[in-house]
Length: 145
Image (cartoon, rainbow, N blue to C red; front, top):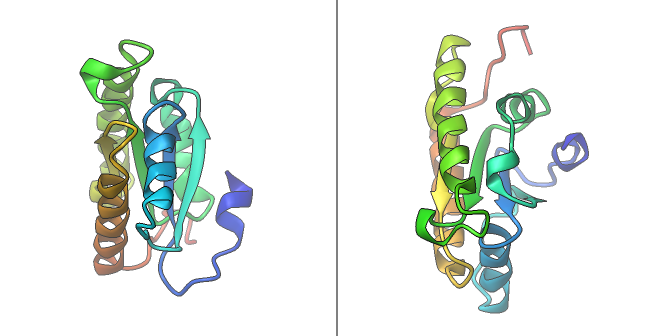
């Protein structure tokens, strides 16, 4: 994750997209195959299932330099691991509560559920998160960073 966040190369704030390999990451692929563009500031990290992402990993993404995090998983009724997306959603809710406690806008974190052919939805979600975090401004961590 640190390597993904280390180089920006764009004036826009970095957004980390944590994508399950079944639907989330294949939606990223389908956006590329359909020549749909999503902002260059969005870094994609593939995981086997969104349900395995831990709250501390989400919070660590912000510490590593992400200005926003989007978790992209399967739709609940189409999850390849049956309950992975539902588990991820509960972790996202917990992480949002923790972010708020730390003085960080919970809107910087969002869960998206899509199927593999919804590359257009991924591109729209990436654009929306980029616009949202641009309006929020730079993240200020409590340790003074």
